[in-house]
Length: 577
Ligand code: PEP
Ligand code: MG
Image (cartoon, rainbow, N blue to C red):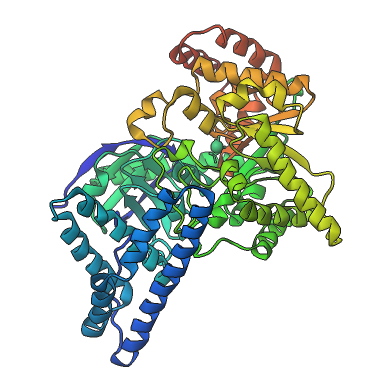
């Protein structure tokens, strides 16, 4: 009889799903042993050699850039990688292996890497044993080039599966074949990790931070994932299967009822209207945005377009995608957030070895350090702007100098477009995300410089409470109801309104009906969330009075602990429903 077990984790995307597990290899290096016909073996060897050469060019390019932008000590890591790409074992053994075994290069490479990593690890010298990581890095780079974009293991699934992994990065989730991945579970991760956000966006039930699950589940096991309750059942009994099927039907019925609200405005009983917008990560999501009755796109996380690509998307490619999204959503607005790379999202092959990536060269910092990459994006957004209702937003702003710097860059791009007679929207609103405590505390100064704010609570909570948003070990401290957070939000909203600019909120707090009530009481103008959350938040808004939410919020702001606050809001919400 199959091994049965119940697991608990952090619920991040609601819904119940039952299906077969697909265990993702932790190093993403596993590959099926695809046989190669005798006549095509040399072609396969050439394909491998080409992937190695491409990797060399990519690494050399990155090395030059890093050397130019930082100091040469950071570039040294790439020397080690270049060295590996000429390594006789890694390269020669793989070539010989393809010829000998007549299997695809991906498979032979994964086998060679495993042997080589063991070899390095066994050398009793710290320097050499840590080189095993370099072997994996380099092999990953070659593997990406071999696979191109289309053959990521999550792209080539042949049946519906629940993905089980130690960790899933945003570069994996962006590659998922959405029609085949019906749920996922990871051993690590926090409630607002980008993996969790992506699951919600795609309405895929998901649980993260499930300790040890990746070691216990094998591909082919049956799983029940309860994404709302944070439960996972490995090889469930017949009774459990029946119970969860019934629950799943009930949830589906509730969703259908909620969808009836899609065409109605998000307006309180006493006539106060809130804009309810959608967050998207990839252009495919625009259909969800429309079907869930959003008032527009409040956050387009454009950095997802850069993930898992062999090269950075060029201006034409970006322009076409931005234009497409604008045309799909118009006349409603689309807020383009410039790329928020760094943190937990990296461009293929460019992974700086930073000790604290969330506090490192991320978002506008990375853009300002790489103006030639940043300007390509700004040009693409500006060129797309006449095709709909575009707004532009900069993430991770920490001070007024950064606002001036990004505006300076924007002016350069506008001047270049003007000189070539290329049209763009001159009225486009420019806003910033307020997600760093320094920006929140100086919101009165920043509000004078921009047309709107969008509060990024996912990061604001992480930085204010010093709690890593992707670390399940400290997830219990990640607290949206913390008085420090609520006071900061109150102050940001007041500062924005004093300068007559509007203020939205696009962190996960917007998607929770309970916190949404508080935000409305605090005076928020717009809430932006994963499209599937919109109907439920709208239902709550249509059942409250602004005056009541304000009274409730005043009371909450006097409270000292998250537990008291949560208790009061829950009681209020219960009485409403
Ligand atoms: C946030 O920080 O709240 C936010 C919306 O941006 P992201 O989750 O992409 O960092
Ligand atoms: Mg953020």
